Amino acid sequence: MKLIQQTVEYLHAVRSEVKKVSWPSKRDTLRYASLVIGIGVATGLFFALSDYGFNQLFEATIYKWAKPAQEIQLDNVKELPLTPGAVQTEPTAPTTPDTGTIDLNDAKPIETPTNQ
Image 1 (cartoon, rainbow, N blue to C red):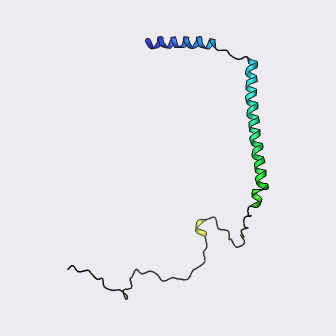
Image 2 (image 1 turned 30 degrees about the vertical axis):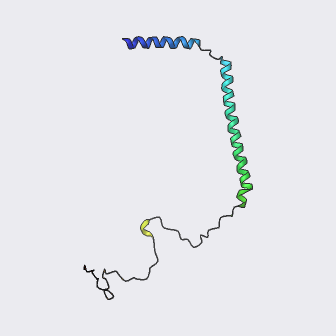
Image 3 (image 1 turned 90 degrees about the vertical axis):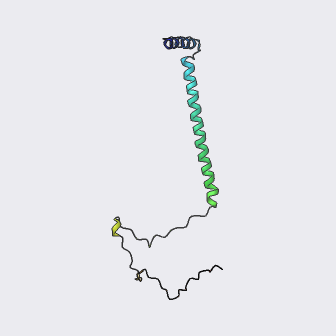
């Protein structure tokens, strides 16, 4: 019961404070809103024009000093087929199969240290 009474008292206090607020007129509200929108548009235009200007400045100065990229010759490149299994490769020279054997002709015995 105490919670309901506190809530009602709170809402009455909020209502009395809202009555004390000096609300702007409709004309003032429209004026302030248009001012905020105008400043936002002006700021956006400023940054857009600054970006464009700096871009033009860099293209006229710094980008002209940079070395141009070398042209890549793609005359010898063959088009690969779209299916993965259809790739054709050039045959290579046959290699000797690895049999897993070890050549022991040059092997030397392991010397074990003796404790004295």
